[in-house]
Length: 455
Ligand code: UGA
Image 1: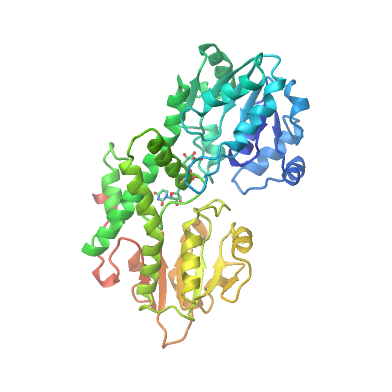
Image 2: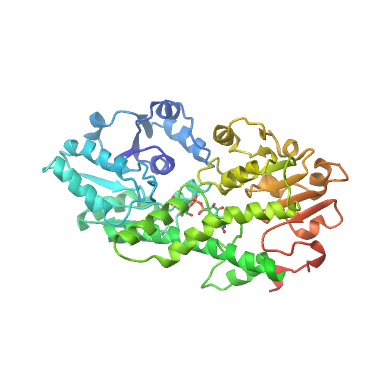
């Protein structure tokens, strides 16, 4: 089967490369010539574990090719996968203009039957809308529209594609089921659950999954705030509630709030969709509000740890990416926190193992934002250190090493504000560092060591 993937962003590229790895012939199309030229040379525009290797292997085996030419290639393919961007408008609605434009462009070329699989995240009703748009342009177009939402986490996208928890396929015409079964045959062989639904159910599943995960994150952050008021420990609490199978252990890590290209956009899209159909989305509203307020809470926390004054202090910022194992800084909580600290006149030095170039592009070089090439360089001489991303590299820092690297000035206290709870507060007992984390007793003197496995 020859597959055309339109759009080589995160979803399109990972899907294209993974379908090529399954053995299909894949042609990826994008109108960004620079990106296509890089991809032709086997250079991925994003950092994603395992992606480079699979990309290069499949180029070598001629399983995957990249082009900017759409129309001339359309008649050569057996299936089209739409993975173009569906960004948010200023009102939080989904901007469907790119995907609608692609539908209009492909419509005149659908002379032979070609299933069109929508991977882009789109509000319920969009697949049906695309079908009508195509038929408006070409009444004789031979195709089916299929909704096939993705559940890829950045940083684990290849793994999530190759070993997913489930595959969801929304159909308009039951006879397109066979081609989808063929597409996902390698996963069926691994006994991955493959669920067939209507178009609208598949579209809703995607939003519901992301909104529920975002709700878990917002919830645990709120509980962390309560823990701080009572000297309870959020890490122990999350572990304990997660042992309840109905709750589960995942997505209970308190932190600086959710970011990335999906949760903020998709919760707002669901909110906006709900309003458009006359439903008041009270839980989603609260999740968005709670997450929006998180940044200020984090800035206040940092300021409080610095006795209310961070003006002129040397601040080491460890992590800019919205989470570990990605170079993506889109909607990263780190961005707003860094901007907040900038306004408070802190002297910031940023370091991230993979996202530093994106951080440079975002902040530029200013008087109070500089960049470090290693975590040691970032920490050296700092009065304050703030951990914003949960990279393993930061988890592996030794508390004594941090204490040695930070400022040795005796008159200014050294503070480490760990907004990802990477360390045990007890580790800092006896060092010259005041360690502040999220939802855990602030002063190590209050900490009682608990073995969470004894719960
Ligand atoms: C998310 C979903 O997890 C994927 O299933 C989905 O396919 C993807 O969106 C998408 O719609 O394309 P992703 O945005 O890559 O994936 O990242 P997550 O791992 O879900 O994390 C999202 C945010 O929540 C991050 O800012 C992360 O730091 C935060 N988070 C996550 C927490 O603060 N605590 C947690 O326990 C988990």
